Image: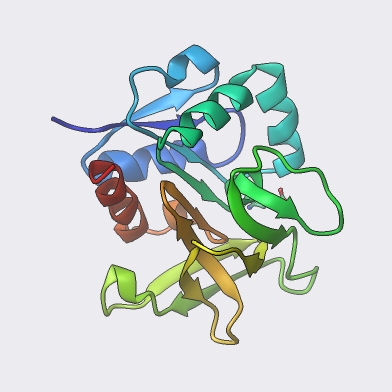
Length: 193
Ligand code: GLN
């Protein structure tokens, strides 16, 4: 049975995530309204603009339902703005969005000069081959709480991917390269929960 994986389709790079999920052998399901969260196995929250996403999550009432489901073990993967959405703490006293994962993130952490860049990351959890990671006005993970596992760092040591129980986050956009390993890692996690 193919897994049905929701992709929050309010704004941002949801179409690319749906393509990656399809290529990784899952059925992608666009999610805008809370009732669309029924009957799916997991959810991806894509990159985009986190302040806009917060407003739209409130407008369509999907936020409360996601918080409720995630509390019961429903797997959620947040990339870039989606990572900001999952964080319990956002630096510079910005509002939290879903507040689910025990991490502190900083928005737009690379400043203007490095708005967008790519870097090969060693992510042992994905195998030996380096992962080409695309960062676009990306956030960083500044602090991780107990129970959070760090999955990836930049060469300078700064943390850009992590997981905690049913939650997975990355600063970068795995849906923009042909490398499906982050999606496959998430699908394996979904299978095991
Ligand atoms: N800079 C965006 C924010 O703070 C995130 C960028 C992205 O998702 N590519 O919401």
